[in-house]
Length: 153
Image (cartoon, rainbow, N blue to C red; front, side, top):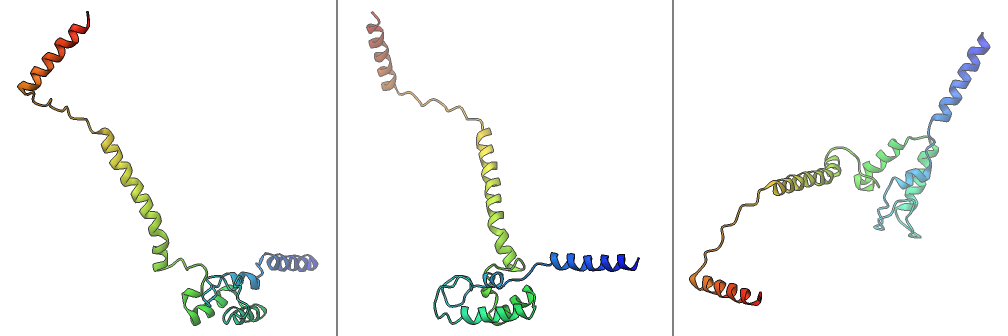
């Protein structure tokens, strides 16, 4: 009985360890934007002697080897450089509004265009009053009618 419990405990520990995602240095380097001005991530920075990427890679490697979590490493970089160091903005506060507003504007515009289009389509065309006929126009019409009748022969 005790061997079954021990075996179950070992299997449980192995499955939990296997399920835990392994944090890699590349994943952390991709999560941070290089501050040298290249606009790339720390992992992708192509400057040979970059004053930010090289020390950041070393610090990330050290933190990962110490067993720090992704959130702890990101928090340490954000504390030093601000949110601009993150390659993807956080989804909270003003950033949440900045993420949602364009989609709301598109949906609102589509609704507005649909409503206006339906109203225009349903509008009954008003019968236009015939323009007033002057005596000269009437005389030309009468002559045109006579000329057309003379061609029917």
